Image (cartoon, rainbow, N blue to C red):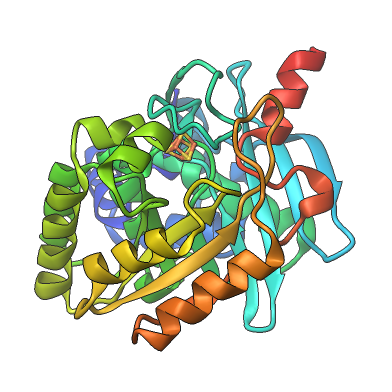
Length: 342
Ligand code: SF4
């Protein structure tokens, strides 16, 4: 049976027409699913019993089970969800002064092999469907009885490697008749799949693009991120400039600082050279040490020096607040532990 959450509103209308129903029923059903966050078709009280039965025969609501939940002292909550086929994914809820932000996974496992990532070493299993991406938000909203205001695609997986499902999930989440989170409050983080960046620039969705850059030379970046052997920094910067020009949106560059690796002044100088004149922001991330990982966190002094140098050169840079450091908040860690213990 198909998960009804895979459909955006237009697709759901077509499904209802195929069932011999009026289009407006699709809007009612869409609202029940995404606004009322129901867990059973029987809760759709303004839908006839007959249509509810038809829906039950044809679709599921794909409601996740919570396998594990870890709460941090800073309010961050990390979920391990059972996606109903024997696999598990991670989702993290973070509390900020502006509201609740959720970090969603886009794939089960990841093919990219970034050396600093806890997902590395876990085999890629499959892409998540749009409905499974959307359900991460709905499941957390149900559990916490809150309304989420921001979504970041920064969990397990490379979102642009699951392009169609991710873009469709954004259209579902963004729909005013559904969860209604503005595209400007949705951010996609990519390791740098250049052709997909060009494709995304043409989509006409106003979401924020965030690039996991992490190094300012090909030599160092290839060592940390094998994707750089496929699309080097020059190609990546060209695609980023195109995205900015086409969408008029500022790009965010993620830079995880690793001790005595990419955190010295030479690296900062090269970074300034790459980004000068670009409409961008640099997010400096104190790296989370992962088990058997090669990289360790830079000293606070090195982090602040790096930030100040960028700011002095006119590149807006901030250090990301470390959330959930007491609960394995680096992507993949909770899932990895669970796999090892099972
Ligand atoms: S950092 Fe992201 S893209 Fe890289 S291996 Fe981890 S999940 Fe995949």
